[in-house]
Length: 489
Length: 143
Image (tube, rainbow over all chains, first blue to last red; front, side, top):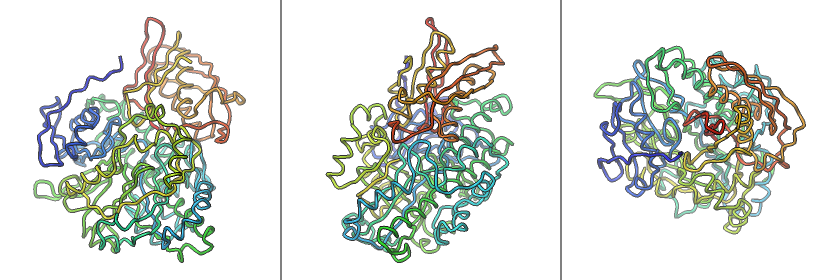
């Protein structure tokens, strides 16, 4: 009864890493779909990805193509790894193209410490991080504020945190959008969303969210010059973490689904192939309400990651008995991979404003963009890609080619290949923890079954994913990081 | 319990089927299934605190969606898990009402053997159907 009868598309090969599904594949497709992947990744992708990607291609106002990144896997509405741009006057906005975890993203922090400095203190460090950065189901943060003050967080994003002493000025310019989306309207956000999330600032959450201490190995630096500009050197220890807007963002997404479904067809005549593709014209009152509420969700997530950075600095200072400045705990960059943002692109010879949905995809602007901080402008925007906790993660740079081809987008992670249920039946969390410790990766978590679900074998090979983005030219490799300790949410 | 987790519908999230001889039983099973995504054993959640959940919706599907969304909301807003439910549904198509007496306790990460956070109920392949044996729902939870 539950088996899905999905058709495998016939792909047109555009290049070794670009595969096109023509509009004739499915009734209603307004544009083709393109998958960025090596042949191997393409063949192994879940068929539901192609079904969902081609559903996206049916949405009103979609420009040029619906894209899927090499880490694509099936979600609902858009596939995870889906990218699509919509005309801002005639197109739609869809919460299913952003995801429930609005502004789920990655932040990378460098240190002046080497692996030899950190090794003797690693247990203490990870235990303290596990204590100071709450994780798991229903966790609340140390920032105790009223719901009214939380509204200022929604408007101010990471800037609110820095004003309150939870961070440095330089952190803001090294955050996508300077850590704050301007078109935010608190009055468009339900009290329910505020009640759900106002005490969750500074928390990791659960599932695939994590905080990881990683090491740079000399052989894993692929672009020495760029690495130097990004403050990366051999044997260096860095900290990377992955989380989003917590219950606050999840509730904004749920509220919007409830608001869009009753009006979509009756008021706007939009027919969709999956309820999770619920959408409304971007210029409609419902579309604008979601957009301005979603921006509040983005800001909450920037604030969340900013406070976590503050806690990381506190923990390192405490363990090494030196201040965070002396230890060189500078933020490299912060990227969001679940958003819909207004950006300008050259379409058929003229510059046009579009609403770019990235669901499990990272913005990847090339050099010379004013959105990229001055110190990185000549090399391009840093792109942070988290792998599974067992394998490794990457720092890449955005490219001009991404701007020309994929609405300035690249991958966001490894992408799951195995369901959570299957992973749980194949791995045991406690055993995995012991095995990983033997391999030199310490794990702290409140959820052993959640740990089993995040086993490395449940994901695509991160190296294959990165190689595909590198070959396609939508981002380029700078360095690969190896995990040594992980707090799993 | 009359619910089971389903393979093959989603790779990144959790899908379940809940059944009941009556529609109320199916709602109660679905409530426990949501809890079962977040803890290894729902029986570990003591039924110490009582709460009444009331919802109204034009369709049974929306009524179930709103009920499950409320459980996820209360998990974050009040850090509460609920494991026991007594549901009562009245009304007709266009105007249904639900009243649930829910029992549970505060989340305790040390004691509850936490699994994974439920972020949202999704509409993806969401189904409520009357069957020869009663009622059946299919739900995917974003985790």
